[in-house]
Image (cartoon, rainbow, N blue to C red; front, side, top):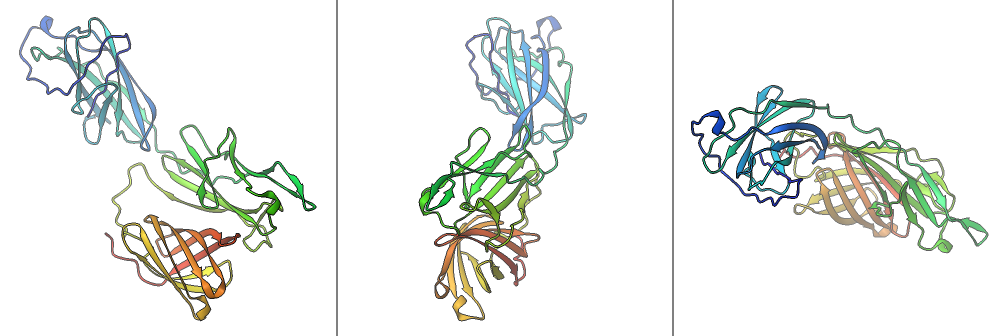
Length: 384
């Protein structure tokens, strides 16, 4: 464990790594004073896990080391835990205070704690000059980490159209706004992507997509929107496609309402070892495209991220190829062309289920949204 201490009373505070000295028998009156006023609380989330914060009062004016004991559900442990003390460097279990001229306060964090677990902490003081320790540990102070929250609900995709102007006898919006999803809570985060690109145009109540050339907007200009909510249990996303000019939700073919589609992946706070293959994409897939027709793709992971895609079908016109990158084991982005059909574009693909299917949402060359659904025809690779 690693402890970081913070001086609150304006004293000069120097810190270093220190190895605890063997205790030397001494009368209690000769020993350094036990830290006092210890209190701890659950303070925030660090790397998807809750964190315990604490403070104490040091009454020694000499160079001392503050040592700690941590109880996890009643058992002393250090496994997986890290004491973090601001403005200090330590060996992970203790830290040194240099020359407090008078009473001072220290503050620390305990990282690596588990959900749904009770932690108790006690402290003692070790004097650097003679190695003597406090006559007793401070009384343990306890706090309980709550259970891991459930996955967020699929977020709503609330869209509004702003700044309409009249052009060519039609009303053309200049911006599309996506409102902050109601599913967010304290400590959760949300993000929005427009046409598979993460948006940075976030305001107080949501995200805004700006139409670059409203006068040139056509009726088949579609905007693919994805809204995601993330909490410590994982990430859940919803998506829809809208017609900017018609200011309405549409399907890819522009004829019927497109229902919200839910995607996402669970990432527990303490995930099990990853036994999946290096890529779930390698192999042969049967694909159905919203542009019409079905075809087969062969996907090969060339290196850790670069991918190649070969497109074939019963109809020679379906032939094409593509390339792209693997974002992670279950997510990839491909560019593709089918020259004989005059088709191409960029598509973001997510493997679903047990790795035997995928869904894709993307943008066709020249505009317009596209979707792919794929079913794997080759068996899964052996685990890595």
